[in-house]
Length: 466
Figure 1 (tube, one colour):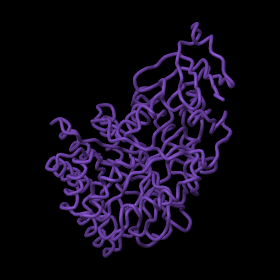
Figure 2: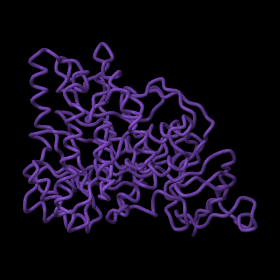
Figure 3: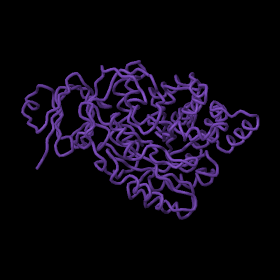
């Protein structure tokens, strides 16, 4: 028996268009769009009618960078796949791409299977995986080909974290060569981790132990240098490159220079770099620990370059790098030694709202909001047009968004499993009202109606943004 939902009277906003249209959903997919009041729209019947008058009707967000249950620094990210995907849904995100982790000495298969097991039956929304390569060798290079066939089509390497995730230039080059051959997209954490470790050691020896020193040792120039090096290695390998969590003006300049040469080089930034700064890291009484993440928060003047990069398309995607650790008992592990503070911020629930605030503030247009938060991440990671747009045949991942509702961001009201908000007290105009995932109501007029296990693994094709 087919099930039909009609979304009536809203302004449909996609990366390409804005139109006053009704949307007909059938059996979990978008069946048709027609101008509001047109003969076609008036002829539609449905089991359920959602009134979108005065609201935007937008594609569900695609957050292509999350870390649920990630082991880090002797603890685990505090959101499980169940709590994290529920919070994502509350924030208007209907697909996440999380990172499965290969441990040194183990196969990619083992790491991927461990992440399948964590997510299976627990997710409120759809999910895919990237694969973190911690140990590049002949065996794991062969496994990359198999993962691409399985719909895990992107691989992350780290120039940071020696002894944990770090790969040297030779291993990075080999992985890039393999990606060039099998279509897998190489994602890069671009920071010179070898040099950073020296600066960490020296800072601690001087007695500089507070959270603000985390930002001071992870220097802008060491992000820019690593970004430059990653680009050159990708050129040698003939491989596309996606640089994650770009935080600094100098790193954006490296990406822009590569793109001016016509190279297939892409960049992502995150809300924390657009809205927070080293002022937060310097908050007294160890409160700065809440804002420790890598790449680190930068001085406020870098924000203008990031917004400009998003407008000029030198940066294509805004993801969250959602990796929450509670202040009590987790961030506190680094009292007296900033290098022991678990790296990561909560944000999967806040991204769509913060970026709408950027529309209100005049940084980006409405369509660009949808482009950087929905359409481009879907295209970049092989999910489009199933995800990231509202078009006949697309999954009915749809958000009714109230652009006039006002809210104050707070840990007291958020749904992430973490005891603080990085944006505590921030006033935002715009709020998610209703969320559908594959046609099923997950949030119904600000009431959660979703369930663990609704979310399904999504097989991704290779990058569609090239």
